[in-house]
Length: 192
Image 1: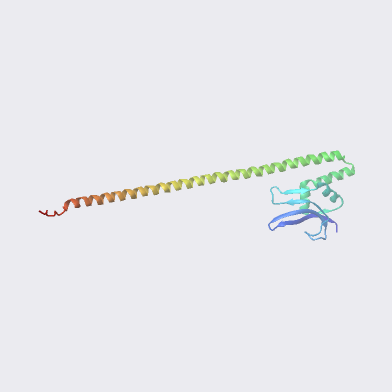
Image 2: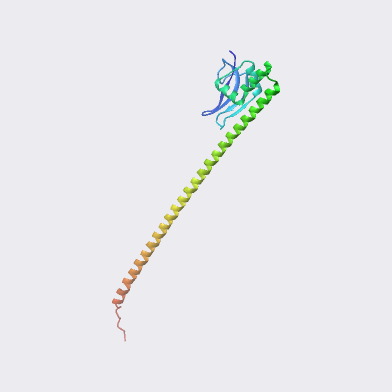
Protein backbone atom coordinates (compact mmCIF):
# COMPACT_ATOMS: atom_id res chain seq x y z
CA UNK A 1 0.00 0.00 0.00
CA UNK A 2 1.16 3.56 -0.59
CA UNK A 3 2.23 5.89 2.13
CA UNK A 4 -0.55 7.89 3.74
CA UNK A 5 -0.49 11.38 5.24
CA UNK A 6 -2.84 11.17 8.21
CA UNK A 7 -3.47 12.21 11.78
CA UNK A 8 -2.19 10.36 14.82
CA UNK A 9 -4.27 11.04 17.94
CA UNK A 10 -2.59 12.07 21.17
CA UNK A 11 -3.80 13.93 24.25
CA UNK A 12 -6.21 13.11 27.03
CA UNK A 13 -9.82 12.06 26.90
CA UNK A 14 -11.92 14.92 25.47
CA UNK A 15 -8.71 16.90 24.80
CA UNK A 16 -7.43 15.69 21.43
CA UNK A 17 -4.09 16.70 20.02
CA UNK A 18 -2.91 15.29 16.70
CA UNK A 19 0.41 14.67 15.01
CA UNK A 20 0.39 14.89 11.22
CA UNK A 21 2.45 11.94 10.05
CA UNK A 22 3.37 9.95 6.98
CA UNK A 23 2.70 6.27 7.65
CA UNK A 24 2.27 3.02 5.80
CA UNK A 25 -1.39 2.55 4.90
CA UNK A 26 -1.45 -0.83 6.71
CA UNK A 27 -0.08 0.55 9.99
CA UNK A 28 -2.53 1.21 12.84
CA UNK A 29 -3.75 4.77 13.40
CA UNK A 30 -1.48 5.49 16.37
CA UNK A 31 1.19 2.96 15.41
CA UNK A 32 4.46 3.20 13.51
CA UNK A 33 5.01 6.10 11.17
CA UNK A 34 7.66 7.03 8.65
CA UNK A 35 7.97 10.76 9.33
CA UNK A 36 6.26 13.42 11.44
CA UNK A 37 5.25 16.48 9.41
CA UNK A 38 3.63 18.63 12.08
CA UNK A 39 0.92 19.01 14.73
CA UNK A 40 -2.75 19.98 14.84
CA UNK A 41 -4.61 21.29 17.91
CA UNK A 42 -8.38 21.62 17.27
CA UNK A 43 -9.14 22.99 20.76
CA UNK A 44 -7.87 26.52 20.09
CA UNK A 45 -9.88 29.08 18.16
CA UNK A 46 -8.85 29.12 15.32
CA UNK A 47 -7.21 25.69 15.32
CA UNK A 48 -3.43 25.70 15.73
CA UNK A 49 -1.59 23.96 12.90
CA UNK A 50 2.19 23.64 12.75
CA UNK A 51 3.31 22.01 9.51
CA UNK A 52 6.54 21.59 7.55
CA UNK A 53 5.24 22.68 4.14
CA UNK A 54 8.35 21.66 2.21
CA UNK A 55 8.37 18.07 3.51
CA UNK A 56 4.63 17.70 3.01
CA UNK A 57 4.98 18.92 -0.58
CA UNK A 58 7.85 16.46 -1.12
CA UNK A 59 5.76 13.55 0.20
CA UNK A 60 2.86 14.50 -2.06
CA UNK A 61 5.30 14.59 -5.00
CA UNK A 62 6.49 11.08 -4.06
CA UNK A 63 2.91 9.75 -4.11
CA UNK A 64 1.70 9.86 -0.50
CA UNK A 65 -2.10 9.98 -0.30
CA UNK A 66 -3.59 12.28 2.37
CA UNK A 67 -6.69 11.28 4.35
CA UNK A 68 -9.73 13.57 4.06
CA UNK A 69 -8.92 15.51 7.23
CA UNK A 70 -5.24 15.69 6.35
CA UNK A 71 -6.19 16.96 2.86
CA UNK A 72 -8.23 19.77 4.43
CA UNK A 73 -5.34 20.69 6.72
CA UNK A 74 -2.85 20.63 3.83
CA UNK A 75 -5.18 22.81 1.78
CA UNK A 76 -5.62 25.23 4.69
CA UNK A 77 -1.85 25.62 5.07
CA UNK A 78 -1.29 25.96 1.29
CA UNK A 79 0.58 22.71 0.67
CA UNK A 80 -1.77 21.65 -2.13
CA UNK A 81 -1.44 25.09 -3.79
CA UNK A 82 2.34 24.90 -3.53
CA UNK A 83 2.32 21.41 -5.06
CA UNK A 84 0.05 22.65 -7.85
CA UNK A 85 2.43 25.53 -8.57
CA UNK A 86 5.42 23.15 -8.52
CA UNK A 87 3.73 20.96 -11.15
CA UNK A 88 3.36 24.11 -13.30
CA UNK A 89 7.07 24.85 -12.82
CA UNK A 90 8.03 21.27 -13.76
CA UNK A 91 5.91 21.49 -16.92
CA UNK A 92 7.38 24.89 -17.81
CA UNK A 93 4.09 26.81 -17.61
CA UNK A 94 5.49 29.31 -15.09
CA UNK A 95 8.89 30.09 -13.65
CA UNK A 96 9.94 29.30 -10.07
CA UNK A 97 9.99 33.02 -9.20
CA UNK A 98 6.41 33.49 -10.41
CA UNK A 99 5.31 30.43 -8.42
CA UNK A 100 7.03 31.75 -5.29
CA UNK A 101 5.41 35.19 -5.74
CA UNK A 102 1.94 33.65 -6.14
CA UNK A 103 2.41 31.41 -3.12
CA UNK A 104 3.70 34.27 -0.94
CA UNK A 105 0.77 36.50 -1.96
CA UNK A 106 -1.68 33.73 -1.08
CA UNK A 107 0.14 33.10 2.21
CA UNK A 108 0.00 36.79 3.20
CA UNK A 109 -3.71 36.99 2.38
CA UNK A 110 -4.35 33.84 4.42
CA UNK A 111 -2.35 35.15 7.40
CA UNK A 112 -4.22 38.47 7.37
CA UNK A 113 -7.54 36.59 7.23
CA UNK A 114 -6.49 34.45 10.22
CA UNK A 115 -5.33 37.57 12.10
CA UNK A 116 -8.74 39.19 11.48
CA UNK A 117 -10.51 36.10 12.79
CA UNK A 118 -8.32 36.08 15.91
CA UNK A 119 -8.96 39.78 16.55
CA UNK A 120 -12.73 39.26 16.11
CA UNK A 121 -12.65 36.39 18.59
CA UNK A 122 -10.65 38.49 21.08
CA UNK A 123 -13.04 41.45 20.66
CA UNK A 124 -16.02 39.20 21.18
CA UNK A 125 -14.45 37.73 24.33
CA UNK A 126 -13.69 41.24 25.61
CA UNK A 127 -17.26 42.42 24.98
CA UNK A 128 -18.67 39.32 26.70
CA UNK A 129 -16.41 39.91 29.71
CA UNK A 130 -17.40 43.59 29.79
CA UNK A 131 -21.12 42.79 29.66
CA UNK A 132 -20.70 40.18 32.40
CA UNK A 133 -18.83 42.70 34.55
CA UNK A 134 -21.55 45.31 34.04
CA UNK A 135 -24.26 42.78 34.89
CA UNK A 136 -22.32 41.77 38.01
CA UNK A 137 -21.97 45.44 39.04
CA UNK A 138 -25.71 45.96 38.63
CA UNK A 139 -26.43 42.82 40.64
CA UNK A 140 -24.04 43.94 43.38
CA UNK A 141 -25.67 47.38 43.48
CA UNK A 142 -29.11 45.79 43.76
CA UNK A 143 -27.86 43.54 46.58
CA UNK A 144 -26.28 46.54 48.34
CA UNK A 145 -29.56 48.47 48.06
CA UNK A 146 -31.50 45.48 49.41
CA UNK A 147 -29.07 45.11 52.32
CA UNK A 148 -29.24 48.86 53.04
CA UNK A 149 -33.06 48.76 52.97
CA UNK A 150 -33.04 45.75 55.26
CA UNK A 151 -30.65 47.44 57.68
CA UNK A 152 -32.74 50.63 57.59
CA UNK A 153 -35.91 48.63 58.30
CA UNK A 154 -34.17 46.81 61.13
CA UNK A 155 -32.91 50.12 62.57
CA UNK A 156 -36.42 51.60 62.31
CA UNK A 157 -37.92 48.52 63.95
CA UNK A 158 -35.32 48.72 66.71
CA UNK A 159 -36.01 52.42 67.20
CA UNK A 160 -39.76 51.78 67.32
CA UNK A 161 -39.27 48.96 69.82
CA UNK A 162 -37.05 51.22 71.93
CA UNK A 163 -39.65 54.00 71.76
CA UNK A 164 -42.38 51.55 72.79
CA UNK A 165 -40.24 50.29 75.66
CA UNK A 166 -39.59 53.88 76.80
CA UNK A 167 -43.30 54.71 76.52
CA UNK A 168 -44.20 51.59 78.49
CA UNK A 169 -41.60 52.46 81.12
CA UNK A 170 -42.92 56.02 81.31
CA UNK A 171 -46.47 54.69 81.71
CA UNK A 172 -45.36 52.30 84.43
CA UNK A 173 -43.58 55.13 86.23
CA UNK A 174 -46.62 57.34 85.85
CA UNK A 175 -48.88 54.70 87.41
CA UNK A 176 -46.48 54.05 90.28
CA UNK A 177 -46.07 57.72 91.15
CA UNK A 178 -49.79 58.46 91.92
CA UNK A 179 -50.09 55.19 93.84
CA UNK A 180 -47.16 56.19 95.99
CA UNK A 181 -48.75 59.57 96.72
CA UNK A 182 -52.10 58.04 97.72
CA UNK A 183 -50.67 55.74 100.35
CA UNK A 184 -48.97 57.88 102.90
CA UNK A 185 -46.39 56.25 104.99
CA UNK A 186 -47.49 55.36 108.51
CA UNK A 187 -46.20 57.68 111.00
CA UNK A 188 -44.47 56.13 113.90
CA UNK A 189 -45.30 57.55 117.36
CA UNK A 190 -42.57 59.54 118.74
CA UNK A 191 -41.15 58.40 122.02
CA UNK A 192 -40.95 60.87 124.78
